[in-house]
Image (cartoon, rainbow, N blue to C red; front, side):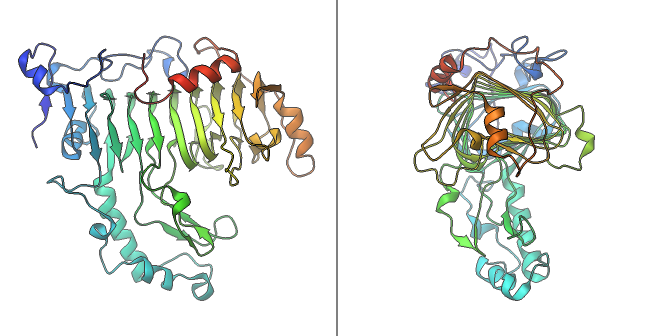
Length: 429
């Protein structure tokens, strides 16, 4: 499929290619402002702003998007997403569902029969149905996994939606993703892991955005959700929710110098993992991430969960709905993490206590100040330590560093109002 190159000097051709509802202000060559979080370190993050006219694209379907990404090349490029793009489509643009990917005789019914813990036991699935599941999963991954290379800017035009895709920023640097509604990175073929969490669990394959081995990345004014196939409506299989989604935005495998700002994380279980394993000691000194002015709404856990990284969490808005009886925690303090939390606002129903906002796994430190809980100032650490005395180790406030790269830090009350109005796709001023 032919890509449409949009040049600044394209005249009439440019007017024909750009939708009438395009942004009033062209944000495609914007760069990360100075001091705006960890991604501003050093030379900062400029994305594809240096792209020549031949590498500025407007894309309207999966084939055009994949061609513009060019297999994750490092050539400076700007990609403008127009309309709704469905990653689960073939080369002709026809929609593909899970049955279209299934191969080797895979069916969920046969898979469940083969690996029922009552007959299979606790061994890892193996054999014909697991092999068929893997082959089917590979067919879906070929369509929905889209690799983003270095020196790339991806921006959504007004109302742009990317659904079903897993954007992978893999071993790349200098990447900007803005003003895009990413939804429903749906895994057709979850794998059963019988030894996870004691009771076993289903593991899924795709994050809406996954940063792996990458640095200097700015994610701004995006909306990420499971919209279309919420996991809460999936069945219970082998006693566990049959999850179809992994993370909304995961930052792993030595990724570093990342700013996530003015974005909405909506209706999801495990929203954001920073650092993917307690034993991955190569992450030490990396995973430096800034999260500011984001809204975490109807998120069960991991907002974020951190290992190893120096993570600045400020001026974020957390909203736990009245019917959220599966809520677990918001800020996860894991191995060698160093989280510096400032002026965040939490709104929760009555059954959620202040001490529920934080969870620790081998973590020892959390700096917290200016937290607002249902309109009242609270001090998270002493409440957490008192509530969890005897069951989890106490947290200390000494995280060993003080953030210097950040925008103006507002009060939690002011941030709560501003984030409610301004976070998410379509809200860049």
